[in-house]
Amino acid sequence: MAGGSTLQSDERIPENEDAISAQAQEITEKVRATGDGLISVLEEIQLRYGYLPEKALRTVAETAGKSLVDVYGVATFYRSFSLEPRGKHLVCACVGTACHVRGAPMVVEEFERQLGIPRGETTADKEFTLETANCLGACALGPIVVIDGRYFSKVGKSRVRQLLDDALAGFGEIDVRKDPRVFPVEVSCPCCNHSLMDESAGIDGHPSIRVTVSFDRKHGSLRLSSLYGSYNILAEPDIPEGTVVGFFCPHCHATLSGFGECPTCRAPMVAMIVRGGGMVQVCSRRGCKNHMLDLV
Image (cartoon, rainbow, N blue to C red; front, side, top):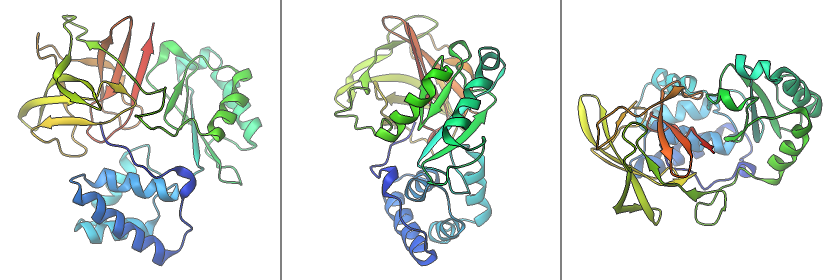
């Protein structure tokens, strides 16, 4: 539920405290001028450096007029942020029960062998960081591996090398206008099966997905881009960054509950039925980009 950045991971800036401070101040002022909040600022900084340098966090606090405790609180709450340098490509393998019984330990061992590092470490060339998670929210499709935000299902040992090669080739770089992996979906309510598509208000050149939302004792309307891979939204009233939002069908008023929590920020997932068979789930926290698609 957030917009993306145009900076690519291979454009990271060399570490120098004065340069880090200047860049952090520039990013904070630029992002805040667009109306986005602290999460977007930290996302931009991490994309530049691969992690959140201490000097950058101190500069963000000073520039934004926030306490350092508040900035560190956000930086440590979201799993997608790191206070230590990480590789250009983040590999996260699920080792939860469902994936474990389907061979996840052998997949992790193969990643360790191919990369030459144990889980939790970064390769010497700073290309890859290998992590594991107890659950990534797609148990029926295990073993699950997430690389640069991309979910890969039923991963076996023989597929590990190809996934690493694809990551180096740049499959994580997305342009919603040109990338064939970004495509429109039509969705409906999983309770009443009524279409959630709204042709009267388009986003990204396609009909939007309209739902009813509630947060902080407020109620309103939210429109999501129907392009899978785009994070553009229209909300009335505006939803502050970091807010967990309740999603409801505008027709039957049922809660659009997903399966479990977001593996990134632990907020509830929101589920919608995809026309033609399948389900899409998105995180209910404003600013979190986690989403999953399971097509039949």
